[in-house]
Length: 195
Image (cartoon, rainbow, N blue to C red; front, side, top):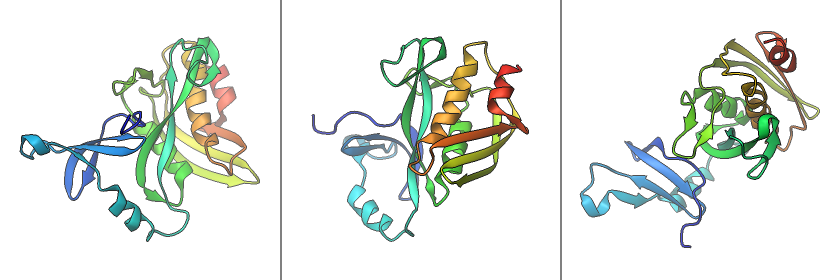
C-alpha cells in the first residue's frame, strides 16, 4: 500500500559511485547496498535530489523507456494479444539519459541475453540473437529502423514474439504511429516469413 506495485525487475545500477541492485516501484526506488551494516542494506533512492538534478538536463532528455517482453500463453490478459496465444508486455527500463530514446530502447532490449526476464517469468524471444541498431529515423510518424546481426529463434511461435518485441518497443513513442523494420536489409515481415 505504501510503495505500490513493482515497475521493473531488479537490475544493476551505479548509485553515488557504488554498484548496487535496484528495483523501481510506483512510489519508490529500493536499493540493495550489500556493503552497508545490516539495518542499512536496503535503502530508498534519493529521488527528490535526482529529479532536481534531472531538471538541469537538456529538454527532451529521456532516462526511462519501455522494453517489451512476452507473457507466454497469456491470451491477451496482461497486454496486447499476439500469435500463439501470448501477450506482449511493457516493462520499464532505465537507460543513460539521451535525446535518442528509440535507439536506446532497442539497444536495451537487445542487451538482454536471458531467456526469461528476471523473476517476472516474461519470455524474451530475442535472447539468442545478436542484433545492433544501424539507423533509426522518425519522419512523418513512421519510424524506419535498420538492424544488423545474427538471429536465432526457437520455433514457429517465436516469430510473432520476436516481431512484437521489436515493433512494440518502437511504437511506444508518441511521435511514432508506424514502424518499418529491416534486418540485414530485409523487411522484418519478409525476414520472419522466409525463415
